[in-house]
Amino acid sequence: MSREIADHLRYYAELGVTGLSRDAKWRARADAVPEVRLKADATGQSATESLDLIETEIGPACTRCKLCTLGRTQVVFGVGHPKARLMFVGEAPGEEEDERGEPFVGRSGQLLTKIIEAIGLSREQVYIANVIKCRPPNNRNPEPDEVAACEPYLFRQIDVINPTVIVPLGKFAAQCLLKTTDPITKLRGRRFDYRGTTLIPTFHPAYLLRNPSAKREVWDDMKLVRAILQGDA
Ligand code: URA
Image (spheres, helix red, strand yellow):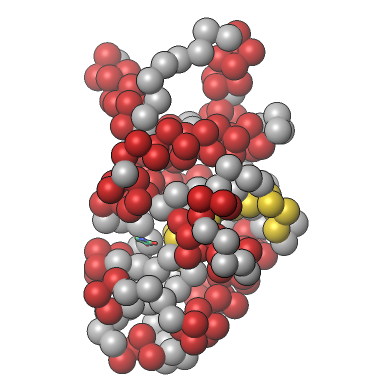
């Protein structure tokens, strides 16, 4: 038990959280986090089928853009609950994601998992996808023709999952979803209406690995996400 508490405190410390609130209302809210409910099973079943259809349509050997000739191992579709109320969108698979076929499993992914757990959820309860489903060579930025070929599938994933909140991770995903060239520093800290959901852009975990002090702002963003999921904001 004390080990579990120590682990939990480490998540928070890693996220840059340095204190706990004694405010009874806030504590009651925090305790309620595990109650964040997933949508009903029947719609979950049909969402699973719809996501499977999209994945099948993309196919395991997609050739819709040049990334298929530039060394990608496999298409990395997305992972998580088909009716998640919270969805994260990253940029593109990196080396480990390309090898394992799952988004955010490398170092940034491990930090993302901690961020998810810090608001009382698990990776299985949320959905994680990328704008681009194939790894760009040497992790270069995705190019406009690659985005144009791939983003319709992300939009279809979003429409099926229909989350309450979408969190684009970093500049690339935020700019792609919002169709803006505004910098992430201008986009984060704000909430946007987006395809019937609320979009809360935040920094990319890879940026947090290079700039740990920005974890504080991400924690602020995640507290807002949690409050929205609980109907408190
Ligand atoms: N960075 C991303 O944007 N997506 C991943 O899946 C991994 C790292």
